[in-house]
Image (tube, rainbow, N blue to C red; front, side):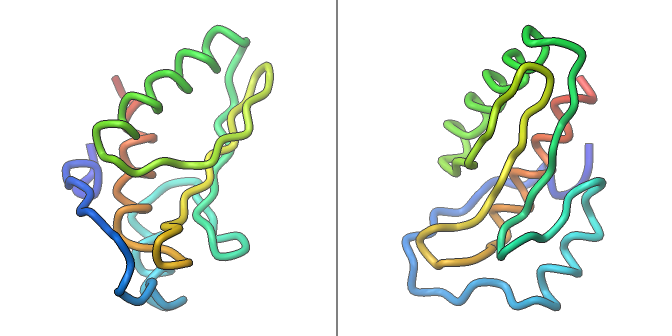
Length: 109
């Protein structure tokens, strides 16, 4: 499990600046397969079938609840697109990268 995945999200109600491009790109180096797209942190997870896809989505929902930080998801038969951004600040925060690392950690179980 990565160092990011071991961290806990901090409540964000706004009033702080989002990460700038250099900060976001530096944090992106700690993740595998994630990209920055339109101000969001994005990854598409491929699966073999619908059952595996939904098992991942349900596990991700549990993590999102525990971290109180929720992604936008696009779910298909054999894939799930995960998008993180911190809506309260209109951009990316460390929370997005923490949760992205936790997503990846799901597949290491």
